[in-house]
Amino acid sequence: MRKKIFIVALILLVSFCFVSCGGKSAEGSAAATESVKAEKILAKLVSCWSETYPAGHADTLFCDSMKKMAGDLIDIELYRENTLVGPKEVFDAVADNVAEMGSEYPGYWVGKDTAFNLLAAWPMGMDVYDYTNWIFEGGGMDEYKRVYGKFGLEVFPFGPITIESGPRGTKPIKSLADYKGLKLRISGSAQGIIAAKLGAAQVAIQSSEVYQAMQTGVIDAAESSTPFADWSLGYQEITQYASNPGWNQPGTICCLIVNKETFDKYPEKLKAMIETAAYSTFTKMIPYNDYKGAECALKFRDEYGVKMDTLSEKDLLTLQDWAYEIMYDNASKNPSFAQVAYSMAKYQHMYQYWKEAHQTIGGHGWAKQPLPDLEKLKSYVK
View 1 (tube, rainbow, N blue to C red):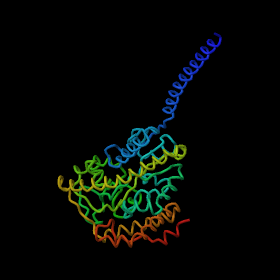
View 2 (tube, rainbow, N blue to C red):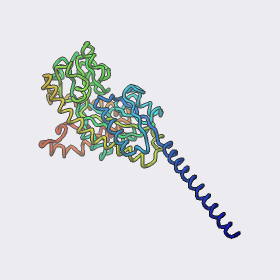
View 3 (cartoon, one colour):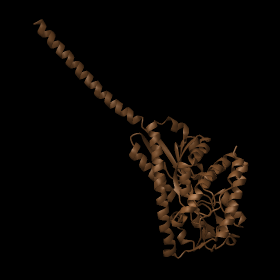
């Protein structure tokens, strides 16, 4: 009898322990699930661009890719132009960790280091295909990392823009002489120096302000970006003439920046996903801008009768000489600028032989373009 009671008691005890442990296990699983949810990383991405401006498409592509790849690890909240900070505040917002990420244009930060001008675009400089070669194979990525790293930022080039339109306006620009006296919206410090040499006045306004400025006579002509971007801004309604090629920005690079201290704390898997999403965005943005730019160039001509004039090779050579003069001057004053310029020039000299060889069957760029003085730039590197 005692043996039976003992066995029954033992069975009840085991059953109780099993039920109790099972209950704790279920509670523990639920708690663990909640803990994982609680640990999901939240990040703000502030952008220089609106949703409708073509450069802002990189933001959409990047965020979409991150949601697909890393939606269980991070939530990225995208703040478009002027919704959290203004375009010229993006860099500092990310450096100060007000926002963890930013979508930006390096040329906005030349006041911090003139080398940013080269990392963005340079008049009569490299086109987007040269930038791609240089960044991913020719040492350019090291220069982006070095320059941005000084300000506590991790950087990923992710928004390439193909050759821009030249100025569009109400007066024809058939030669450099036609620039004289123009009130010109043109971005970039080097571009502004060239505009002054041409006798034009650089007017510093945002692309979104061009439409009204043109209507009210504040400016006579403006460049913003590709024909696609110009079309999205309504330039077809306010301009009758276009001058090409886009000597001011043959190629342009926009970047994703991440607060470095924050980035370094991310899991390695997430870091790799951010890099992958950024470079996937890079590859998609080239055909996006190029194809739609070509479409819109035709629409300017066919739907609005905009007349396109082309500068002579003699004029382009003059612009090239001025662009190199400004490059050498900047290199002599800033070793950081000199290091980027020298790295670029080494790539250009290496690639020139092959560029000339295949130019006749659809190569990119201006094959006979004079190259920068490699030894002069090297002398400024410290």
